[in-house]
Image: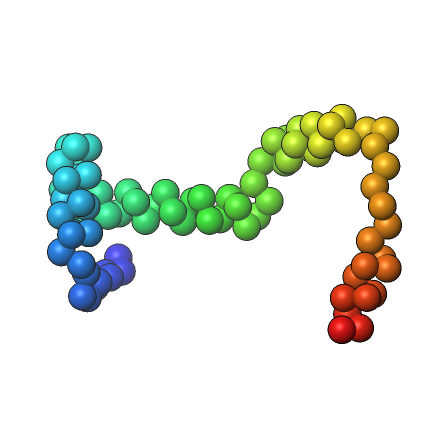
Length: 84
């Protein structure tokens, strides 16, 4: 299994990580592995589209919220801005 070396870690951060490990009943190494696994899963979940059902629900809420409202066409404003 791969090993990672983290150099120049701020002592304050190290102390916080040690405190977290103690709170969770883990060794520092176990706590760091847990944190890295969570971060990797979250990043993968985010970049692979996440929960499509939640996304659909958010879109449906936005559609209801903005239904019947008129919005100005921003094409001219964008064109003017680009010509500056």
